[in-house]
Picture 1: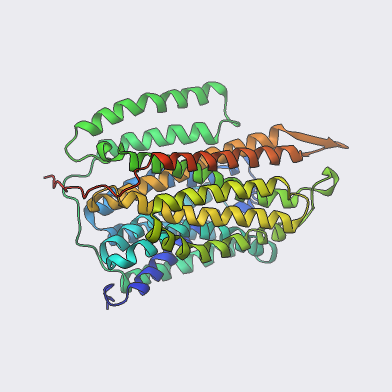
Picture 2 (picture 1 turned 45 degrees about the vertical axis):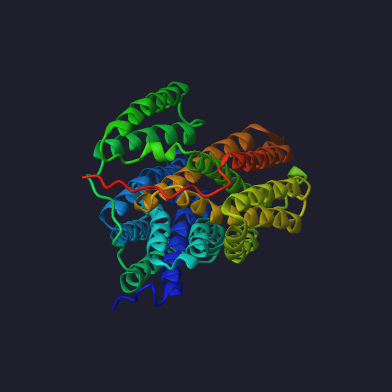
Length: 469
């Protein structure tokens, strides 16, 4: 029997937030296993890296597509499809050690990232107005909360159990998620009419694949290939935009997304995603650096994962606080102080890389800023787009965070591989490499704070919804 959200909005929020956290965890649980996978799968590291790349690709492609499909065909229906994709992917990864099967499974898991923007849209449609902003703040933050808890949990499993166990756990919780959604979450009656823009979806997907492959494989593939992919991505943009502006039922309403409130919020999301991911990538590796480097602590993989836990707790605690700030001062103000807080966290990190306590403090400050920022982004988007485009709009905002993370991963890998020290035939990143990463990430957060100035301070007038046939 379905529980109506008007009677139990907290239960609806809890079910959707659980979905978001689990999906976010599923994206990161393979990270601690990467050093072991070449031996497990009998494959070179360059092939194993596809377990991250393919998740990034499918997440980027399917998040805006499923968001648009949710607006048109039912958000709960598409949410269940995304959760089913995660369950299928978990089953494949849990039942095989073959790299090809693992890559396919990770592709299915990546597509499930659309759960978060779909959940935000459902909350906007179904909850009482006074609960919407606090609820979407929590839902949006699940992307960061899941990542913060996923890596420590995975390190414990990798250290003390068979690595397949984490995928079996993910599978079981995914099935539970589906049951909870069926029992608790209603289907929204708000729909966008028209036909699904198949050609527009194909064009956007092709652009994202070319762009993200060029970014994520820039250090592994030949220059000719990377230049070709980059050129293809650049050429697709005007062609796709020309088509979207002329079709009756576009996948992306570019006129809406060109508004300053949407455009600069999305650009800010890209930079926030960059700054957030740099924190996760650098923390886990910095703690494990060997002691012969002069700065390394030589800690275990479990300790490196546990260093991220306080940041996860901070994100859980600060998500509702962010909603209160947005309600009192507006999400624009909230995003500004969050970006500055992230930049301050990286300043702390510049001077606290010599001990675990200092590293944890700096990482936690960055995570705190991330929680506040992630909570404010969907509120800014929803203030500027029609209710019939909420899922698609938040899907694109999530996509921008994903692109920021992809760019971050490439830059961090390049810096750590290019600025090194050696001793007795051993090579490791120099301390200055980590400091460069912190400076770049801090600047990224500050630029995001600057972009807030271009977002209109007042909420735009309500948009007249034009129903297309």
